[in-house]
Image (cartoon, rainbow, N blue to C red):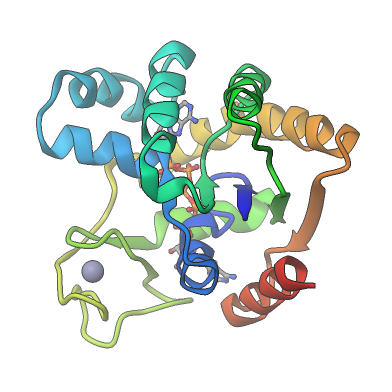
Length: 214
Ligand code: AP5
Ligand code: ZN
């Protein structure tokens, strides 16, 4: 099954990705994670992406599309994929559609995790991310069992540089309009399904899995 998770920064895409991929047995492909990995490895791509990510801006389309399609080309996504954070605008969505079409494939579901912007600032500024496996926690809404340590791999939890309040505000401003254009794009294609992402994490997971399996 080929699935796209759409949502503003902090909507819970990364949080929900784990239960979805565990259930569908498909890879979780997050362009944000790929850029962060490239930066950790100090590659040219990572250093270029950092210039944009640290300001909350989008990495240029040509670079992002190349990276996402290269990842999709791995054989592990032959049986399906969960895309998180890609596409992020209509140019990227068109590129994805063309790529899949060239392989006689298509997107099966687009799930829009909708959360009011007023909630997102608190979610992102309170987020802590595992430096080992990338799992997301929240200091209040989703704390780890041991402070500053990941429940899954015991890695150190860190505060992402782009989760500082000023950068979060800029990310929300930039992504709002783009997300609206994408929800319209996939509504026209009759692929969009909207989930209320302001509910408890377990309720959101259940609603997404119900939608994908029914
Ligand atoms: P990326 O890493 O994709 O960031 P994002 O889209 O801004 O999304 P987030 O990871 O911040 O949020 P999320 O929805 O995954 O929320 P989470 O589950 O962690 O991208 C980073 C940057 O890379 C971009 O700014 C850009 O520069 C670049 N980039 C990436 N893709 C690109 C592209 N396609 N084109 C161009 N540039 C690109 O949850 C957030 C918090 O809320 C956590 O603390 C969590 O515990 C908590 N939480 C989650 N769900 C709930 C709930 N239901 N109730 C209470 N708390 C909850
Ligand atoms: Zn971890």
